[in-house]
Image 1 (cartoon, rainbow, N blue to C red):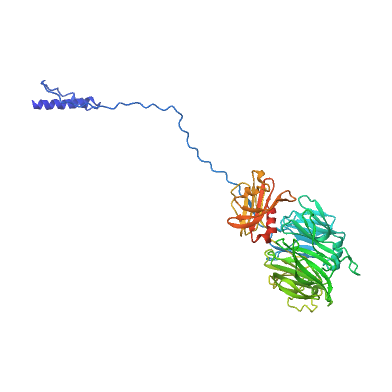
Image 2 (cartoon, one colour; image 1 turned 90 degrees about the vertical axis):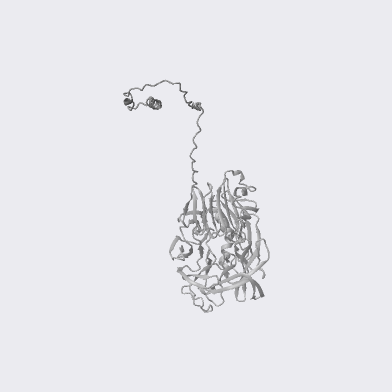
Length: 578
């Protein structure tokens, strides 16, 4: 019985397997004869029922799916400037056979810039030369050599640039000057000469008045010149007495006499050859006292440009060239031409050079008695006819006779010729260092011109700066900046042109400078405005200038202690930018 019950259970299990599959294994099971099963009252074992979870369908959303996150677009790179290296080095300019020659003192390479030259002047950045030749004044670009005629039909001499390079001062007369000047030759020239200003942007000319020797102050706002002598002294046959050193503003107005000469023993016969100190606060000039103790005496005077006390600095004989100040204003070089030498000497033997440090005092003897002089004599060298400072002020170049011996006895007539001479380099102590070149015209003018500037430009936007400065990365369109040794030149395009006026211009450059004080702006010949200011930059005290027009502002500054002597250079950089 139990056997049958177990067999029944086995069959039930096999049946369940067969019912749940379609495998061919079910075929053999069907050939087994079914067993006989006795029905008994068996209570079935309860099997639990498996409750499956009710599946609830999820409805698909019919809303718009979220947009994909866009890939960030990189900002458009700011245009970077084209940077042009300097195209010419420092050069010493001189005359050879009447031609203007430039020599690189490092390589001794020479080039001819112009012919038939009477006088020459260079702008503050060293890029442009004004050259008086025959009856014209030409503008020469030192880089390209291009020539533009500024003035025609006038015999000009005594050229001076405004520091912004927009205006040139000159004197012109019916007859050319006889050079080198002495009392008579200068008087004849200046008595018939007239001082003019010409604005380069418009070529408009302004007549200042009768006189000669015009020279711009380093701030560009004032001009000094010698008025024409008006009286013929004693039995002399030329008008060599009574004139003044006159100051005017750039418009030729507000004229007044800084110094006068009327022929009296104290004032002398003439005042001539004014020269501004680099800070524009002081003016130097020569006072011709006349014949005293067998020689014609002169005094180099330095006085406050507002009319303060005169300070005699040098006693010279004969006729003096303009005082030449070092770039830092600490030294003055003087050259005298003793045309009335009582020894009967001539040529190079009647020339002398003196170098004075403008510090301390000394006493020298005049026929009228002892005279206290401002400054300390550093060096005196014979037979030097011209002198010019290097751009850095660390040396000078002078013109001497050929085979010059600096220690030769000045009382021996060794160099009585007027033939071409040599250029020598001197230290700031007046010590000869090396011969530069020869075959230089007797008494030639000299200029030690600076090297070219680096040019950075984007389109029409331009700045120019010294090669040792650093150019700053461009951070805004229309903006260019360079810095070096605490100096700065920056150019910016201003979207809101209404801010570019005398009271709000500083808001456009507040990230560059903090302005504490600013002078009223004044307009220049190109239509732009110039403002002098002082304040702070990067935590340091500065002074400088802002130049602005309808949509552009340019800032040029230096440390506050350096700015007075560097303001002409700083203004020049501001106007070299566009």
